[in-house]
Structures are given as structure tokens and as C-alpha cells.
Image 1 (cartoon, helix red, strand yellow):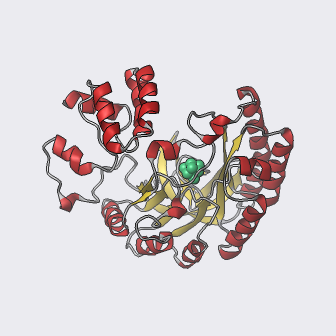
Image 2: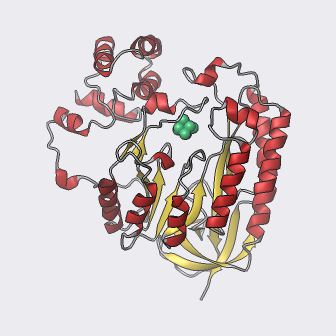
Image 3: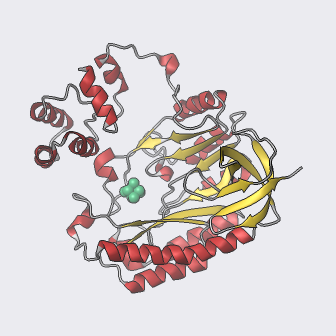
Length: 393
Ligand code: SF4
């Protein structure tokens, strides 16, 4: 029994039942059960959870146990371990000790045409506020100074368990935690964005002026085909509101190129939009034709090469914007967290930069700095995606 469960963990997750597609994909890759599982996936989609589990057990007897992703009690029982309530909220950190990701919910209720996540992870399930506060307090006790709130869809938080959007309440509770210096928000869906978040962001010093809001595209034709439930005009209004309510906020977004039916005119419109709204950070993906998504019914009519060319064209356009925005920072001082030391230099981030995906601040000079500590860094040089500065005395 132990062997199977350990191997499943290596495959990426403990086997799940209610999120069975995701797990099946992992299994397919890891155990080469592809054909058997594809068949099974089609058969089981229409059945209830119990039947799905039974089917999986029958079809893949080599696997010892199947669990839902939220079935911690059952997993522990399988290992004959006790559920210790005093350990709720305890975590092993896989990141350096000064920052941590805080997953506030699982799954997603949205219906974006290109996205397989709702199929893989199921509908949105929020973690209760009390649990998240406890988890964060424990993290802070271990030395964490920055938490990055993540979810497939952040703004939906609370609607399932509290029957109302509760992200502002959660943010206020987290911002009250002593010693927590930065709270950062990732993946906020633009449609029906809860504007009150912006008030909390402005009022609370330890919520970073940073918002990651994936817009995916700017052409109404493509937004509609993507089923994003928002128009270009509504996004324009939202961006203006965000910037008015939180002046100086760093806006990050992600885009997709090569969605079925996208033309060069749509790409031009997207560039025009980026030029007008000058996002601080942009990430780009090329469209991937995923089985069982609604976009799978469309003709994936753009070659991978062309998708990549369009992504490159947009990135080059954005690179100029990023360079100009970075130049504006030269001569200014920013509170900076020190993440690591590399090639004899320290690398850090301002509140406008998330780990791995955004700018880094290169700190020159030979003074010794403490990893995970904050320093005021005066920016002396700026590049396309990075800044360079010195510790201000
Ligand atoms: S793209 Fe994001 S919001 Fe849309 S369905 Fe996927 S996870 Fe949900």
C-alpha cells in the first residue's frame, strides 16, 4: 500500500476522486495508463462520485486508494494516523522561510472556454477565514514576512461558504496579524471584481499595492469567444477605477495569443490596449487546445509557430513599456526584501514585484545583508525587467 501512495505523490498529488480529471492526467503521464484512463474518463464523467471512485478502483486495481483532494481525514485513516486538530494550519515550507504562498481556495466556478481547471479541480471551495488566519499566524511565527494569496480565482472567495464575497474581510483579518509585512494578491478575475478590495488595499499598509489580474485579451470578439464575461470597455472602466482608488498600484496581467479565430487585427488591438493602459507586468501564454474544454469545439486554426510569433511580438512591445516604467524609478527609494545572494550580489524585490515572475532588484555594494530582511534601496539604474540600487544609509 505504501508504495502506491508514495508513487502517486511523486506524480504530483495524492489521488483524488472529486477532482478526478486532474489526477487522471497525472496518472496518465506517470504510470502510462493513458488509453485505459481516457476511456474511463469519458465513462465516468456522467456518474456520481461514488461510482467514479468504484470505476477507478475496478479499472486500476494496482492503485491502493483514491481520495478527494479535501479528504484529509480519509487519507490519515488510510495511514492509521490520527487527525490532530492542534496541527490544523501547520505547514512545512517549501519556500525560503521569509515568504509563503497561501492558497485560499481550490477549484473554480468560472467558465473560460480555454481552461480545463474547473474540470480538473472541480468547483470553487473556499477555506474558512479562521483556518487561513491560523495558518498565516503559524507561518509568521516561523519567520514568514510575506504571504502571496493564491487561488484559481481569488475574487470568488467566500461565495460558496459565506454566500458573499469575503476577500475584503479576509484581507482585513490577515492585515491585523503582527509581523506580517506584505500581503500580495494573485489571480483576480476582472468580471464582477469586488471593488471594496481596493479600499482595504489603500487603508492597510501591509497589503502590497500590487494586483495580478489576468485579462487574457482585449479584443471583444476574442473575449466573447473565450467566455470571459467581460468586455474591453468594462475592463477599461475597471482599470481606471483600480488606479484611481489605489494610486501607484502595480498592475500585473497575463494574456493568451493564438486563441481560435484570433487575427493579426486582434493582436494589433491587444498591443494598442497595452500601450494605452501600460500594465506594469505582463506574462504571455500561447493557446493550448485542451480536450473537454468548450474551446475544444472550435477549430484550433493557428499554428504553434504563429502563436509563438504573436506572443513574441507582444512581449517585445511590452518590453519597451517595462523599460520606460522602470526608468521612472531611478533616483527613488523602495523598501526591498532580500531574497537571495547570487554571483556575489544580493537580489531582492519591492512591493511591486512577486517572486519568480516579476522584476528583481540587484543590490550593489559589498556590505553584508540579511536574507529575508527589508532594506531601503535607492535605485541607480534600470533595465527592461530589473532594477539596480544601493542600500540607503
Ligand atoms: S482561467 Fe481562471 S477564472 Fe477562468 S476558468 Fe480557468 S481558473 Fe477559472
